[in-house]
Length: 276
View 1 (cartoon, one colour):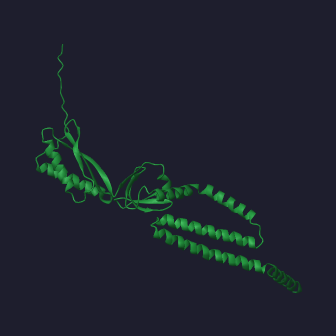
View 2 (cartoon, rainbow, N blue to C red; view 1 turned 45 degrees about the vertical axis):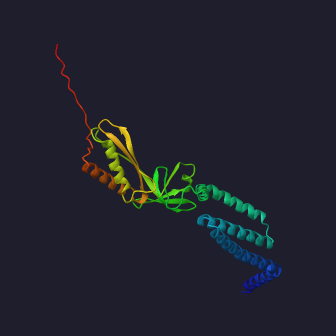
């Protein structure tokens, strides 16, 4: 019992001595940390207001503001550690080693973030645009620092890592997607009449773009028909639905005009070989 009381008394004396010697340093360090917290928060809010006022990109603005906030608060923590009399050189070296190891481990994610910043700054596309990248079509629904999400007509949500957007051929058709199709007309029919009928059907179709004029003309001369090419633009989110409806309308219009869509034909000749 006496030995336990001796240990308690010894701990109490050391605690009092520590507080007497380092109390001002501890209080000073805590004050620095608190000031750093409120200062970083104030700068964060100030930067957000500045970015919003000047129509800066929301994602990049928050990323930059958070980065500045972290730097300020981290710097104040280092100052507070120095206030306690602790050498910060080994601490900085350890933090650097940790960040280096973490950077190597998550270099793929870092590449996505870097690519995301590049996309936000260069703006090759925006939300609502239709893009084709790596053979993937979709309407841009969201642009994040690490990835971009695309929405298809089938309501599929496609997540594309941003590093796959940089350095690749990227096609932006904005809110429309182009249809490239053809239909064969008999050589015996009036081709100009057929082109005019198809043009009227497409141009008067409700969901076909009126901004981008359709292109209708002879694509090539086939074995069995004159192939008329059709190029027109429709909204991405209803691409197949409208395309199939246009095909049906063109088919009906050509039938009503008594224009023939010929079947494939092959002529087979049989030669009789005379016996000698």
